[in-house]
Amino acid sequence: MTNSKQLQMVMRDMLFVTWAVQPERARKLIGERLELDTKTDSTGREFAFASAVCFSVAEVRSSVLPIGLLSFEQVNYRLYVKAGEVPAVCFLDMKVNSRMVTTLMDFLRVPIHHEEIDIDAAGTDTGAVHYRINSAGVRAEAITAEPREELPSVVSLTHGFVTDRLVGYVLAGDGMFKIEVEQPGLDSVSARIVTAEAPRLEQLGLLNSEESTRPHSALYVREASFGANMPTRES
Image (cartoon, rainbow, N blue to C red; front, side, top):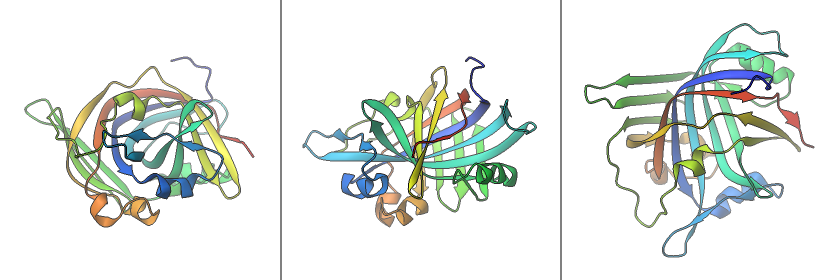
């Protein structure tokens, strides 16, 4: 990790909960500026993918903003897209439980909103991690390091499809922000979902209530360092 970025962050207890969604639902949310990154299963059926990514920011420092050492919890909701040939994500919503962060982002006109978020990640006697996330937008319980039966007729995702994305886009009214990050690679492990609900993805029209309880996959990352520049307005 270099020190070239304007923001330096340490993120802990990251859980990527991913759902396979119908492409026609997803395309309505990204407009014409981005292209969906999809997969096709063995029957020829195409799927797009949406994730709720939950994590604790253990520390964040900035070379351009007058902030002290911050820590908070965040959940972001994303679709997997391409900008040209570059794999990227489109952030549909971002929630944090820090009023200071939402105030700073409001000053920059980046749409990040406050929400109560409770994350609990505890080790078990077997070496697995028992993970719980509770917020208005997503509620889930997962256990790492155990085998998981994949959903039928849905192509398995590689870890890299979900984690190896260094460009993010945030739609804001008629404009769009771009966020570029750098990270040395995420050491992720599969997790078995015990229970899950994603009311926020239901509100966005990506899932119905039954689909919300059946994520495609889950990945857990214990800790990772990220660098990022401040969001830049694309248009």
